[in-house]
Length: 136
Image (cartoon, rainbow, N blue to C red; front, side, top):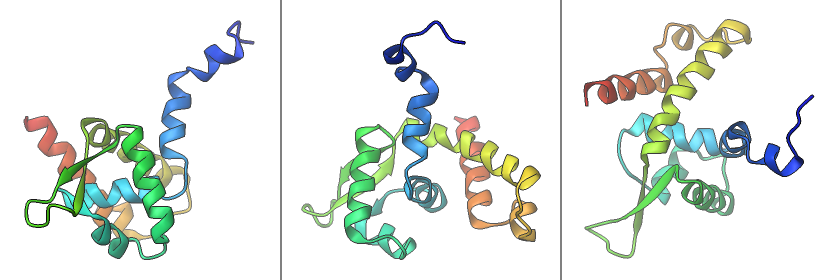
């Protein structure tokens, strides 16, 4: 039993982590940035995740920006059109996602051979991103 008050427990690091990764679509959006390896526009994210409505995508992007996983950058070609990119926190989340993915393969029900062999697009992208960050 914890001796922490309810407000102290709410400040727990795990609460922040689950707050960021648990809402539907957040992981999918972050994985698209990892897979792309650069910045994406709203329409590009929407094309890559067609199941998400524009309204929900807008809400998720705003949420990820507020929680410092994404940042906005101005599009040089079209000044009024924003692009988004992973922040340092979003990039470091790739380590967590790699671990979650490995755990899911070991203990979950994944039967996709490409995924199991780390050849799916998300597995390859996470591995590539982590390799690039260890070189820096």
